[in-house]
Image (cartoon, rainbow over all chains, first blue to last red; front, side, top):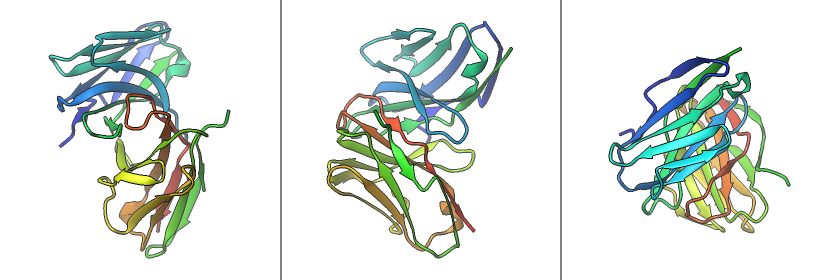
Amino acid sequence: DQQVKQNSPSLSVQEGRISILNCDYTNSMFDYFLWYKKYPAEGPTFLISISSIKDKNEDGRFTVFLNKSAKHLSLHIVPSQPGDSAVYFCAATGGTSYGKLTFGQGTILTVHP
Amino acid sequence: GAGVSQSPSNKVTEKGKDVELRCDPISGHTALYWYRQSLGQGLEFLIYFQGNSAPDKSGLPSDRFSAERTGGSVSTLTIQRTQQEDSAVYLCASSSSPGGRREQYFGPGTRLTVT
């Protein structure tokens, strides 16, 4: 039972355009959501998070949107840069999970110059 | 300041041998998590430590897996009688917020290959 899903294994965008990465979840106990970026042979790096009391959080070029009724969140990167090319993981936590994160399968983002 | 460190970075072992993986969390972080990422898979939770105790071991895949944490700092993940399906990248993360809603900071991982 995959509680966090990233249905797009890969995404390719042109430099300067918007990248939109999507994530769906099924567990209604999740109340905190995070996006991580991962380069090969490195650990995931925290990007941005959002609490379920909000529907949007912005940090520089990164914005995360949360639609609780649809159990859907998305990460927008504007403008996209070649250095953004990496694997992006959506993660969620909540309830009595002690903060453990449930991750999606990841989306490989490629930004072309 | 120093981030989360893990050692070794790579480990190749023969099936049936025991291995120990080490994690040094960020200083002062009381919460410590182990995850693993198998080939082509997302990250999978293994165990959570708050201080030296482990209130959540639900992700450990079998009794061949164990972990401990001493002094509220360093943690060791031990896999006994390794099997080929144990091959994965083992990641450690720490957080300043025990069980709370804060980001976790990950180490670079240990790539375990069981031959």
